[in-house]
Length: 330
Image (cartoon, rainbow, N blue to C red):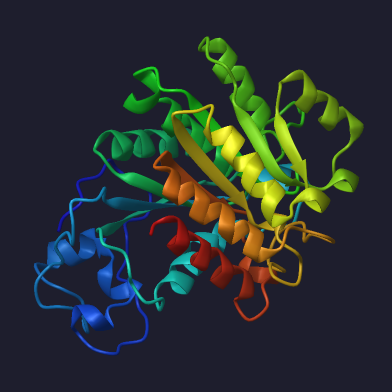
């Protein structure tokens, strides 16, 4: 199956993983994901079915798109390394058993060159909008959390938003990322979104679960309050309160953009991030949110941000992120 795409900076490459057999019952992600290099070769990579994979059902196809960037983290005085995350996330997804009943295609990577973050965000937004308008559910593999504004550019340009549907942005994160700074960074994307939504004459609907009070200044809480941001502190994120918080937000929107900053998780679960959490939200709670969002029927786009493979331990953070992506696409 060939995926017709706008130009990306790095085309998709064949995936690898454990091989248990050719049949559907043996299939893992690396065998199931379609990419341009497969199609161009006129067949499958070694270990895969001889014929290109076909859709297993009429469910919406998925397109994965990498955003290789840590320029926003560097500007935010964090630990660079997130530019290597898309490759690490694919490596972690590859060996997982494939239980989805729809097709998944890899669209390749948009790569931020040097310090030109804004151009990279614009390119990713353009590719993403075209994928969305072609009928895909999209997943961006970040990248620092500057990924969020790149995702927003694509989502806000899509037909779903321009048709008048109410867009909501749900962020699972220890930080508001509402900083007022002279240049954009991984700490500014949601303030950038708020201003863009105001310019477009739309209400800014933004909610965050997992906020660490000691890691967000009073200025950031005041900004959140002025913008009408809904938030839930990490210490309040038990299963029931988090479920109700997410349900209340979903009730007020038509389409959802979900962004997961992996530093929302405890450092023991997600050590490979720029700013590991001293407290964090337990993985079962985050996983339950993912299932809740997937069942809502409102998930338009999702991204995962802030994986830093250089600081990961035994691929722990990447594997956790891969599991969450798999859950969201069920």
